[in-house]
Length: 370
Ligand code: PCP
Image (tube, rainbow, N blue to C red):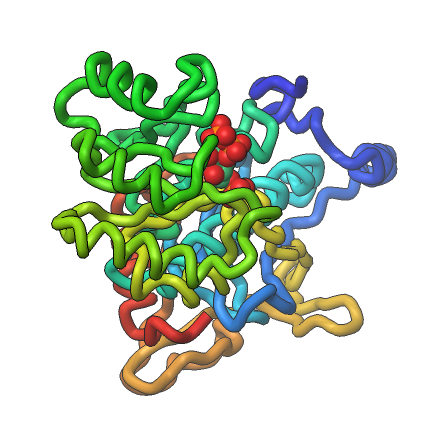
């Protein structure tokens, strides 16, 4: 396993950066550059920028200055999300880790935000830390939380976000039947843990949800295996009907197991909460790349990229990337903020402020937009 020190010291890198450094050092060349990090395309129309906290930790104490979009900002293809200025050798070897931080975290935060936007007032819970290496569970839950999920399942989640979950199939199998397992869970769990009872282990959902409701469930969780999901909509409607007709209108339906954003859209009218694993934790990464755009004050670029330092401007009806040397469009303000000056951290990366930014950003999108 690669430890934190190896990463922060730049020793988890692509070897071509070592070759680059060797060549530059041999010739005493270390130009002062400006580099920008941009995604030319995204898996969806917009993305959520996340992972800056780790970038700031990585670059703290190096001889660079950094400006960036605040975490949780909605961004679009072609917008520079981070600007790094300093001698190239100060950050050359850190590019691999730096991009890895934001590519992965932004992918997860983007997927979580899209799913939460689709779910509207229905709860979305992050159940997917088991889909990735446990060493990155904190990052997954942090990015999912910033993206807008209502709770996460992993006990290593950072901060004070709700850590939620009740029982797996394993508990029911250990008791040999659902009723005894639910009762054991009820006796052992603190009173503030919602009594969400899993209802699909041995019997038909319709029978088990009524038994669960009679046993005191506040919600029933259906994790129906794909092999049994002939028509999940029909199963959900039948379950809802039987709960209602037997006087359990307040018992909610919690759905989990291989769900995608399309399932959330299909069932959000009848399901109160969604447990989502892989669709968040295995989200496609955002393909950010780092490009030098200025060397010793002269605008430069490789083919296919625009030279010179850029700024993102936003205002009422305005969202545009312009050369930073030009005046801003009227009524618009620059979005990149300073985070590091000469190696000294000057800007915080607060998780809950980032989450609030996502929420404010996606409120302007309709629930049907994906
Ligand atoms: C786990 C959990 C959710 C799954 C993971 C979410 O399922 O119960 O349904 O992850 P996904 O969206 O990637 O499927 P199982 O591994 O079946 O867990 P268990 O049987 O222990 O409840």
